[in-house]
Image (cartoon, rainbow, N blue to C red; front, side, top):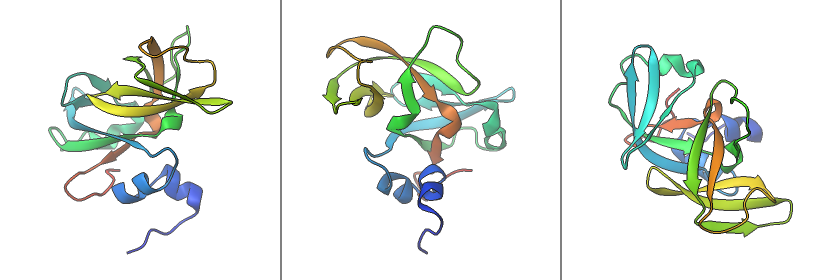
Length: 156
């Protein structure tokens, strides 16, 4: 079956890991994790340590999914530099060390590690100044894609 829908719909709400990885440049970051649910909350726990709590909007994942292996898909565009105020609902703060900086003019592609995996964050041109710098990022988990690695299907 071929994916059907408008390009932006397929980009923002892919139904398979293949489509999530195929659409977009740079590609979506895929980080292996385990889905944990407890007390009405859901989180992804990375294999190398660390966890991100999923927003309340992902409530339907909470039933019967505890312990499920997933690939956490975070698009480079869903990162930003963390501001000084409290983040909005579903946005979490994440501290990372800059491994690589790729300036492109108005944007900078920055490689960091999430869950022990290289991940690319698309930031404003002057958000990062040097390799090895520790930066605080905001990650919009409202837009994260969770993929079942066994079937390749997005968990909705």
